[in-house]
Amino acid sequence: MNKKNKVIVAATQMSCSWEIEENLSKAKEIIYDAAKKGANIILLQELFQTPYFCIQYDEKIFRLAKTYENNEVLKEMAEIAKKLNVVLPISFFEKDNNVYFNSIAVINSDGKILGKYRKSHIPDGAGYLEKYYFNPGDTGFKVWETSFGKIGIGICWDQWFPEAARIMALKGADILFYPTAIGDEIMSEYDSSSAWQRVMQGHAAANIIPVVASNRIGSESVKGQTNGFYGKSFICDRTGKIIAEASKDKQEIIMSEIDIQDDHLFRRNWGLFRDRRIDLYKELLTLDGKIKD
Image 1 (tube, rainbow, N blue to C red):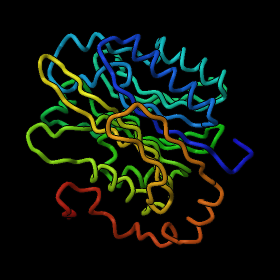
Image 2 (image 1 turned 135 degrees about the vertical axis):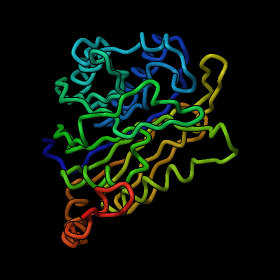
Image 3 (image 1 turned 180 degrees about the vertical axis):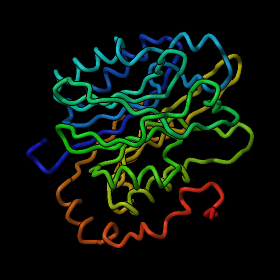
Image 4 (image 1 turned 45 degrees about the horizontal axis):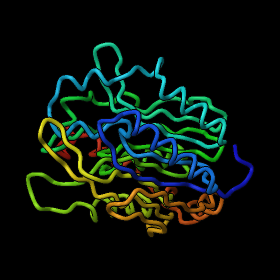
């Protein structure tokens, strides 16, 4: 565990193309740049190795999936994490026998891969056809003890569910991280960017915990269908206030210092976890709010 209470986190964003090696090079450059600027934990966006392929159905894309155990990108990122003394949550398209997951591997600053989280909530809508590609995650919500504090990670659609954030906070997370891929709502003119930020700001305030979110930028196409992404990666403090925010269309690294110990003491003093009434929350385990006799 980091002996210092203060941790520097970095949110990032970049565009992606079908030149996969170019995407990887870009991601590594961002990691090196953020580390040079002093970042301890660096968050890349969801599925950064390729365009966001869930825009359209394409059976050929399943060939891109890799196993967790023999994943050359994860091995390379582990070497980078160790060299730079940084923590790296790394998104990847996972194959496990006959099932596929949208996964994150958490790499500690010593290069050890601490484990993986598989995205729990899988969306299915125009431009976000993830149920075609991914099985619902089976890992449950997890928290990892890293060199720079305990971190919890949700992936994109997970960010809309307060239950996930609360569980990670209950498990002792010091900071919540959300790698994402969100932009155009293809079937409407609705701009979800403000709601996307506000829901995570709400998780921060309700759990008195900082939140870091990394999105992507640019336009990407799959089989003639195009989707644009609105960036706006951000970091908010324990009150939900945005303390660093990226643009809608530029590759960027944003950073902020977080005082883990001060946040912990404030969270304890506020009493939200003390005053929870778990005996009254049984309806949360139902689909329709009705408790069966």
